[in-house]
Structure formats: C-alpha cells, structure tokens
Length: 325
Image (tube, rainbow, N blue to C red; front, side, top):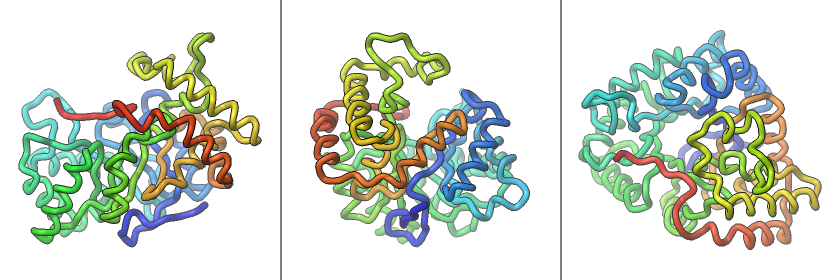
C-alpha cells in the first residue's frame, strides 16, 4: 500500500480508502465487518463514513468492527451537516447541531476521537465563523484531530480558508468532491485552488457509482444486485453519455490487461492534489478488484486516451452534488 499526506497536514492516509455508504444498507453487518477487516489487512488505513449513512447504521457497524484494539490503526473520518431528521436543528453546520452530532458519532463509533471530521455540505444559513469556531473548539478539545469540507464550491472553500487564517482557527485540510472520469468538473476551479492552498482532494463516486466498472450497458438489463438494482434512486445517474463512457473505458482496460474499475481508480490517483480515493464495496471480491489499482502504472499513451474520452465530462453539471435546500 502507498500512503500520502492529507493535503499539507502531517497525516498519512492510504491512496485507496474505504467508503462505507453501503454498510447497513446494501451490505449487511457481517459482510461489512469482513470488508473492513480485509481492507485493514491490505494496508488501507482510511475509512470514511457519515452520520446519515444507512440511517447511522454505517457508523455503528464500523464501531463494532474496530472494537478489540483495531481503532488505533485507522484514520477514521465521518461527516455531519446534511439532513439528519425533521427537527429544526437536525441539519446544517450550527454549533448546536455539530456538537450534538459529534457526540452521537463518537458513541456509535465507540471511540473518543475522530481523526477527520468533515462538514458534509456548505451551510448558507449559518455564519461561517460559527461553524469554523465550533470545529476549532472540537480540535482543541481533542475530540477531533483534523477537519475537512465536502461538497463545497471553490469560492466557499476559499472563503472558509480565509476566515480560518484570519481568526487563527484550525483550517480545512481536505475536501470531498464527486470526481472521476465521468465527472471532471472539479478540475475547472476546485483542484487549482486545492493545489495552491495545500488542501487534499478526497474523491467520492470515483467509479461513478459502478458505471465505470463496465457493468451497465444501454442494451442489457440492470445487473442483479447492482446499485441501480438495489437503490432505485441511483437510476437517475444512468445517462446514456455516461454509460457510453463506461463502455469505452472497459474496452481500453481489456486492451491493456486491466479491469475497468482498477484502471479508472489508477487514473484518479494520479490527478493533482488527490490524497486518497474512497471507494465502496458490498462484498470482499469487489474490494479485492479495487485493490489492483494500487499496482497499475498508466503510461502516457493510456493516460492521454483516458483524458481524451473523458474530456467532455469536464463541463456541465457534476455527476453528484449534495446540498442543503
């Protein structure tokens, strides 16, 4: 396994991280725990979750999996800020909500600290100073070690960095964004900003929800047990242009002796400012295939071809974006 600094912080994370959105939903507890233990055994040290994943079951399962002394070897990341419930203070980045959700996450994860606490999306209704001061207090308390953003526009992230610098708060060291061959929109503004400011990029949906694995096509039925099969809401992402891209990537991967998933992940790992790529799994074989990406070297010819076929995806709407409405 290879490790990189998370942004300009001193924290080292595995280049491949484990996303746990499916735990407690598309993967049951026993399977999820097996995947976590397999990931740790392979050298993955970065596990990413959130307070809303599978109605908080993801955090609870991770807490079970890391009991018995495994916690100290893990860089554990979670998030808060998207809608958690129907109450007036059950979403957003207010001090009230964040402090409450941090305590709930700590309890479910069976830990007394979070390595990377991330704001799940920008909150236009709460003063940014309130959010950043709250996060700084969490760091000073020892309950949080580093802080990160997620689903921030470039101007929102830069504003947050400026406020933190002027007030002496702990700054964001990373930001999560949808980023893949099927979504290169971060390259227009967000990535140049992160390179300049030393913020680590953590791509989510690196395989466009499985589309870049080549499992979907325009002519065949939705594969059984695929994300589109088990999560009807995902079907909105199955656009013709994206599926066509997946087929082109699969063809190129076969020509060079790789799986489509592994090659897509390897391409993403080579992009500027990327610290770790979080990819989910619903069974151990899937994780094993994704781990192949670490050993793939993409020469300039293959990289150029991937850049060319995915270039149209630098423009237009992001593949995914989660915001408060």
